[in-house]
Image (cartoon, rainbow, N blue to C red):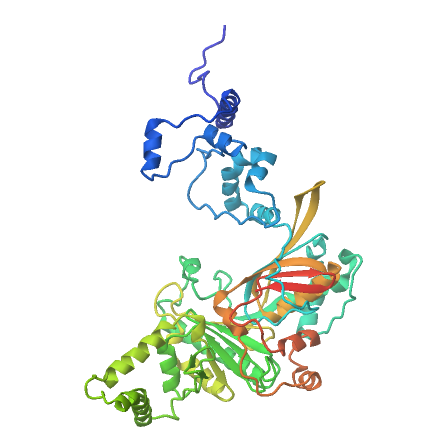
Length: 562
């Protein structure tokens, strides 16, 4: 006779046992059902006739599809914070076949979502299992393959490389290798690796060069604050300590220090000791490029996205700029200057345009019968079109030559550069540079490797990945791909995650003069970049308003998709 234990219920079953019994009950019902289709109940037929969307019965779904029963929702899983379902690879099996191959995945699928929130490693592994290799359709692959990638001036936030060969050589660098990589970066040491490295883990030169490619320079630097990206970063900064938000004296000190760093960085750019740098504000991002890069023989600055208020303020300061993506009447929009055109001249131009637009009414003799719109209505209509392109890629502004110095002074003295309220209140913009400058802090991109097992036809195979996160600038992207080309024997795939407001920096600008390689190396040879990287950045951008999304290297030949 069993002893009675207080609080013990013999009929209690654990949740897994309950789900197992339900699955057994569904399978028994399917086996007992006749092959002939069962008629729907009368209330259900009436609801379907009324157009209501009803969930099919598990047994009915199994009979209709000829496959297993539909997966039941786990009643013990949390419903909130569920990530969206990843798209299936084009060459993968249908979902029904996947469920038939591994029925245990259905009952544990929603519980795995909770693990992904607690353990990011499981999320990365799940991504690799879903997309083991990056595949391209014929429409995505460019017509001509190339041994080099096109130049991409956007800032990446994450790189995910996958390969059939391990990336363990990138983990746990020795103290001497880390120090050597920092010294190579500070001295701008040129490292040339062989085309293929047999044993990357034993290559000290490769590991030092990898450390060198992960270094970038930042100002200001607060370890507890994420200073990139700045656009849309209020949610990440909420609740962080910001002692300067309500202290005007501290705000003045931070802005004064930022102005010194900004001026130092521009002087390095002007003397061609810095190839480019970014200014990241809470509203827009600016890319400054030295003369000789991207097919321009003068300093250029791209501002994106902009608003009508910012453009009017630049115009009032006498900054000449153009809108490269805006065309009017079949020709490109002329440069806008705050000093070249006065109010009277602008009024004359608008009147002339108005007379020309309504001159055809006089030709047919009905100019007195049709009321012309007044000047105010025309002005409001033009302002409406200008406002409609605000915060869009088409609002990108191009500043060239000595006007970039005027832009520098405008940014230093502008009060709208810093947020007046919110989590970013009183915080100066972020300066990102590939070389050191006054007041800068050396930072490192974060890299980690993950090894997983992926299902293949003959069983399971090893799949290796390398993830790099942080503000990944163009020189870092090119340097890392050059290293992986040697370490992975010319074969890897990569997913690139772009900071979207910077994708428009890949537009093709009017080219004045293209410098040859010898002149370029002579003028920009001391800017701190590898000669191959410098040669790539001197190319004319071809990606337009898009950026690199997926890259595949096979037999040392690149295919990419933007």
